[in-house]
Image 1 (tube, rainbow, N blue to C red):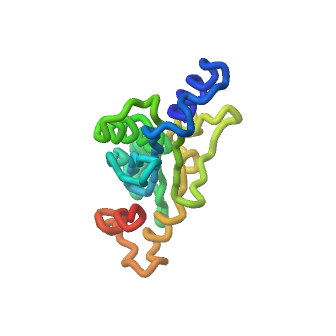
Image 2 (cartoon, rainbow, N blue to C red; image 1 turned 90 degrees about the vertical axis):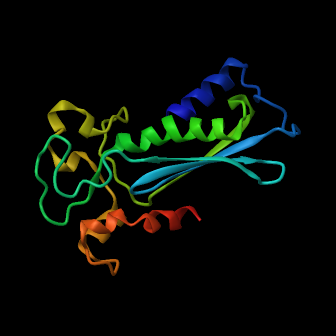
Length: 177
């Protein structure tokens, strides 16, 4: 949301005109993949599809299987996440990938996002996730439920169902390739 707001603000500041010509050779796009344990960003040159810079941001809360951040214990078969972890991917991995690519943000003509399918985030009508409100911080239903994480937790995907499965670095890497 933050990145999209910044892009919209720049677009409107220029009277609704594109930031750069479509014919410009120095155009770049950013791809963002937000998964269960981390989010990744990649900068791609439009002219030839070359990947110029990448960055990864690990979710600080990962998957909540035992307790919420405030210590509230969770029951069995719970696998929840903190929605703000996804926003942090945009705040950290996107700028890091642009720095790694050595490009000016004004040269970015598009951003594409991919989030874990079916992620439900209970929110107020203004988009504020309920877990960010003091009165809901200790309520499990105020957090994001990720079906993929729940299946892994319950063993429905052929794994042992052990929370230790979340430590497998190859599990997340396959979604990026």
